[in-house]
Amino acid sequence: QVQLVESGGGLVQAGGSLRLSCAASDRAFSSYAMGWFRQAPGQKREFVAGISWSGDLTNYADSVRGRFTISRDNAKNTVYLQMNSLRPEDTAVYYCAADRISSSSVRVGAIDYWGQGTQVTVSS
Image 1: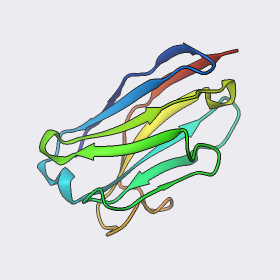
Image 2 (image 1 turned 60 degrees about the vertical axis):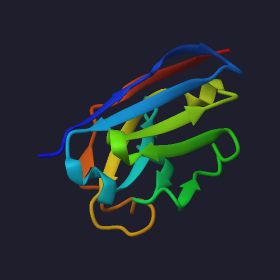
Image 3 (image 1 turned 120 degrees about the horizontal axis):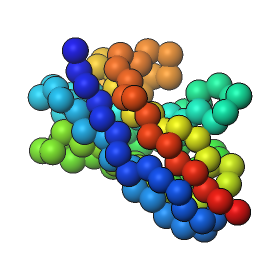
């Protein structure tokens, strides 16, 4: 069973920045497409950003494009989410996700592994 452990969440003022990290326990991490999702209270979990196994392909939700950047370091088995210009509506629990098969970004309906989540709270 692959373990994904997120870190880096916290409380930040609107306009501020945070960087989330997700460390994977599996050496096969370098072959997985990875992604970040979020879930606000009372809302469905939604896609935020995805990255291919090589890091060459990325995609973003319209709501975060231009403010968030996903990246990965396969030597460290870690994927990152740099979040800038944060807004109160970005407040949510953020989850790391792995797709073992995709050759591009994560397939939203085909996630194999989830992290436990990290809380991000943006105050106005």
